[in-house]
Image 1 (cartoon, rainbow, N blue to C red):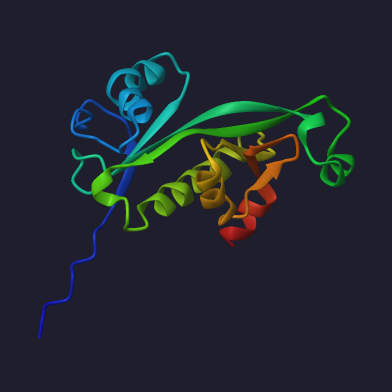
Image 2 (spheres, rainbow, N blue to C red; image 1 turned 90 degrees about the vertical axis):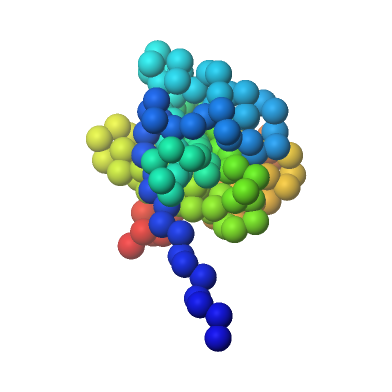
Length: 173
């Protein structure tokens, strides 16, 4: 009888100099380049919070970024907007980039990253108001991935999606 496969224990933590950014490869040059050359600068300049998923504190299995964001009220679907506000803008949180290393591409690790990001967004919304979490999907396949988490496409931009914070709250109850 074969031994059961050991379950991996991921931790998600803020990007630090201990993480091996050079070894990361998700297969998308723009995301690989961002992590390797820009992410630390964005953290230092407070342009984005970068979170790393790792099993050992060094190798990067995936990452995502979070930033404050504003949605123009006119972008929100009318059936939601008319109940929401008369303000021109609504506060939100942006998952700006999300990627997993190729080694982890078929293991559900992308979902782990999204769930961790949503949990952090929900926690932060207690102290800094955020009506929703926003993502800009690069293509229809990525949009379909986020729709599995109940993200909703903006009517005028089908690759830009949102998930209201109240929906996130229900996910973690």
